[in-house]
Length: 363
Ligand SMILES: NC(=O)c1ccc[n+]([C@@H]2O[C@H](COP(=O)([O-])OP(=O)(O)OC[C@H]3O[C@@H](n4cnc5c(N)ncnc54)[C@H](O)[C@@H]3O)[C@@H](O)[C@H]2O)c1
Ligand SMILES: [Zn+2]
Image 1 (cartoon, rainbow, N blue to C red):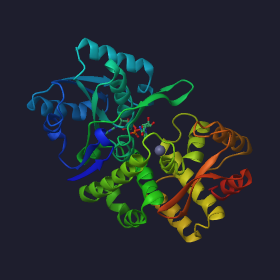
Image 2: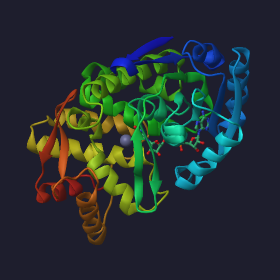
Image 3: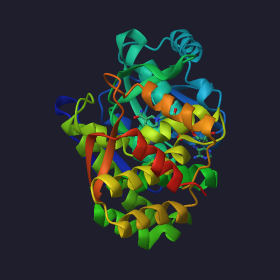
Image 4: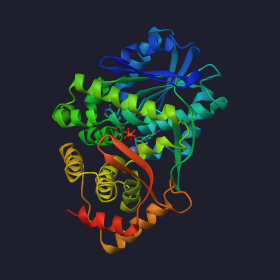
């Protein structure tokens, strides 16, 4: 088992990572000085698999839990489902000292976290992430929120969990496509922050795809450490936190123009990271060799690294990049790599170079 501390002053908390942890949920909550009632929010895939074990563990530690099950997928991140959760919490008389357990992937974490941030002006919450993406990314950092028709994550808040429990045994039932998706963010941490992690991923990719517990535990712990360090320096996203968006400028735009369901977020940002490497090679002298290693590792993880766009789609892609909410004052800015393990943010990239790079990643 590994423990990562997220240093945020009085709101600091621990992330525990390892096998066989779900059964310790109750005991862990018991150390946090919380009320005796709680609600578990989970989705229809995850609840049948893990809610029973979670409830049993809570019960053994003296907690009375109610299970709230929400639909699977992005549609659950809506104000309508938020309202349904509020109603269920009120019906079960959860009060100020009660807490919420988010049991599921990033969707459940973002939704349950937002419910916790706002119900009774804020109650405590605990994250039990069950996807690789949620374990290395969405459960760390305190961003919570839901979608509007106008776009993803447009309503939200910062609300830090009191504790995060990553039981890697839950990853056994994760569909392989979702596992690969998590790997896109794992690889990102190597590129933006840690060349040694990147080297390790090159060595251990096969083991990760086989879900070997030891490698998973160590790699997830390192990713959480990196995200915690970055978030700790910049909790509300005004500076260095931007590096977490490596590959996301083009990635988000690909997601936007491709229509719902074609690419998972992480698949789009896998292509986006390969494109950002191409731009980095042209602008910052990232070496050809490193740019190749970067696209090879995504390919080995089974992620897409190329995209074919006709002229019309290209136009839409560039327009989508300009509309991205991370754009300020109409300027598209990129996170670019100087070398594997070190990036810089706020880089202006000429449109001609973006076009050239898109040519170079045609299949
Ligand atoms: N808050 C943040 O900082 C942050 C960061 C990154 C992403 N996100 C958000 O996270 C969401 C994506 O998260 P995700 O990729 O985890 O998606 P998800 O929550 O939709 O989970 C993916 C799929 O796997 C299923 N699943 C989850 N755990 C499982 C398990 N152990 N076994 C079998 N099936 C399981 C889910 O039911 C779902 O069908 C997006 O909404 C995104 O906006 C938030
Ligand atoms: Zn992402």
